[in-house]
Length: 185
Image 1 (cartoon, one colour):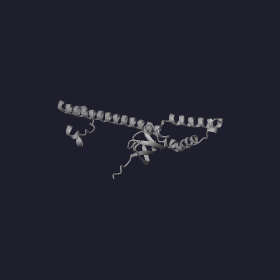
Image 2 (cartoon, rainbow, N blue to C red):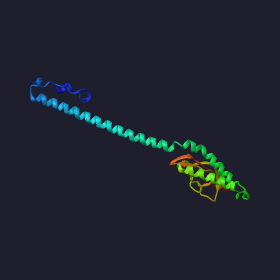
Image 3 (tube, one colour):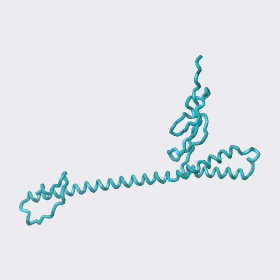
């Protein structure tokens, strides 16, 4: 009777209710009880597996949503980086006789506020100058032969790079030192 209740691949099929008067001996009753316990254990294991799967799904979804929220502003921030670059270039070219004007101070203040807002969003400049060249965070656009710096050292920053959290939003465009070739005579 228990054999009839076992399905394929060892799965326990639901135990069919049996009228008590049809049971004739204790061994049949014992077999029926064992089948019901096996079915109960399988249902419990399946429920526990489903609960664990759902818990893992929920954690993964929360982690993905947090990651998405963290980097959702990256497209807007990337579009603002050229504005920051232009402000930096403009400040470098302000004549000394105009630096004391209040409207110049106002523009400096606006640039500092923009930088503070972007930093609050997690934007950080990539440090490059006098560091070893790293292709993961730097973009070499010029190599210069020199004796004054070690081979592979960043000797100039042409465009500042930025990180948003741990992601590189824009690599730093750099000039890299290259060891001078010795001419043999």
